[in-house]
Image (cartoon, rainbow, N blue to C red; front, side, top):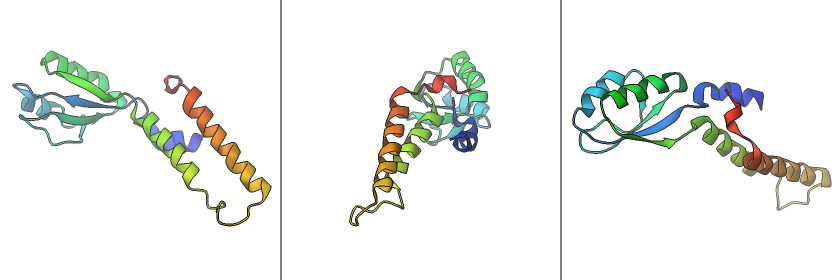
Length: 131
């Protein structure tokens, strides 16, 4: 699990923002273009989605607020979403398990334990503890 936290790195606490169209939006987008990763092309006519890494988040939100640009948080914690998706997909990818063949008890038991651990983690873990 530590290796996955290391791999995800700054994804924890990174957010995806939806920025709403307003007069002057393009000037603000030009200011912050090096601070964010645009998920949709910046535009005057439709909302723009952007990924903001945790170390840039406060500054980007401050610039948006100073320029009266309205935004909403689409994804509160990108790393948490990625981590949960990987945990769930790990349940589906068990090379040792084939339901068409007879399986030894220890293989079935291991899969059950993994599933319980993933469900426990998804239900009870608090990503606010991760810095």
